[in-house]
Image (cartoon, rainbow, N blue to C red; front, top):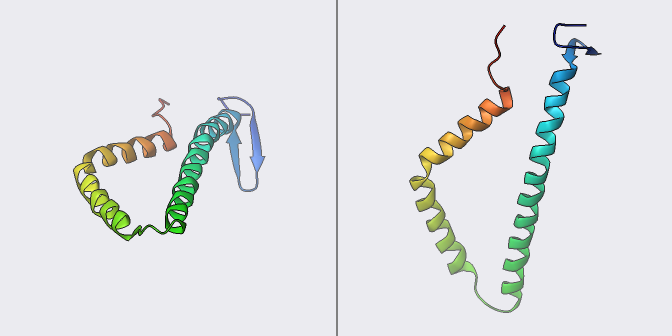
Length: 98
């Protein structure tokens, strides 16, 4: 038992119940996000395949999307950097005293 609460042993280290609860909360948060992202990716690929099946050329659309993606990427560097910093901070957890 530690100061935080009961602990469970795993091979080689001890994990507190509080840490496992936080891991479960993170999984519940990230799970729907990953599900939504994968669903959107599948729909985009399916849409591109349907347009190609109808006989339209998608090469110009994909080339334009690539150039647009580069422009947005260069314009949003600081936003992406802030998001990555937030993600790393959230993954490590808040700073605790003691």
